[in-house]
Length: 369
Image 1 (cartoon, rainbow, N blue to C red):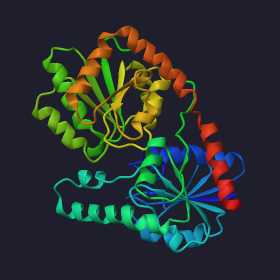
Image 2 (tube, helix red, strand yellow):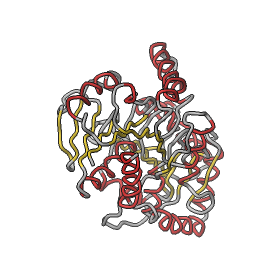
Image 3 (tube, rainbow, N blue to C red):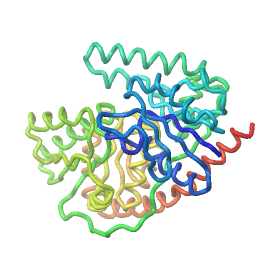
């Protein structure tokens, strides 16, 4: 098949995250099974306009705002003969049903709702844009895509999509995968480490984790917090930690895959305090390396973290409860080890080859109907 992916970023984008990893890992496997993949996304300063990565033909146009307009022109010049289109909603979709007659799948990682305004903060211009995005996602998208198949990442997201009437059909669920690869084995750090490795944005809850670190520091717990990743809220979090003299927090910036494997092995606990996730791929990655996860009890995370088995859940935003659960696992080596082992078994269910094959079957059925 000829597959066209519309996604606002691609794997080389400096702001690439879980959505880009998800589709890139599947797309390169689809190519190995003799399919063609074209990816239309936004550009950034100094980027190549056209690039082939792992066999994927990537075409970049506009920026993160204008790409939703320019993508239509790029489609007609580069992908109009696609057998099936994957229209990825990262807040808003590309509204391909308006101009493309090809068979389509609408992919929704998760519904954003209040995330729009949480990210905008007090900035008036950003709040205006948030209002536009909120309206497009909640009012226009359900109407435009009313006849299209929907795919999402978790049971929680599927229920939210149905309950909010974003689709009249039951969404298909394809969980993200984990890369099973050989890596250099390292042991746990001698001193307790709590690791966060993700994009640093307001809705990701990094402030909640920093507050938990401050709480544990006040209790005289000798626990270090490593925060890896980049994002819009990084500088604010660095300032916040300095302001309150939270000396047990270290910001590491973006890290390589090799470094990620090292950090996830050394960490005693992986933390995911996000207020919203489609699934939480980093949770299962941490489990793959034998590290239990403490995450917010919210959509997506409650699907990827088995409470009491592969990790623990806490009430979203409650930094004291997060601190309590970190303290509990740090002090209970037996429980922490048990959850690490259970996590490794859990992660083994989610290889990318299996995930890519399941999604490809949906695309075949969509193209055939």
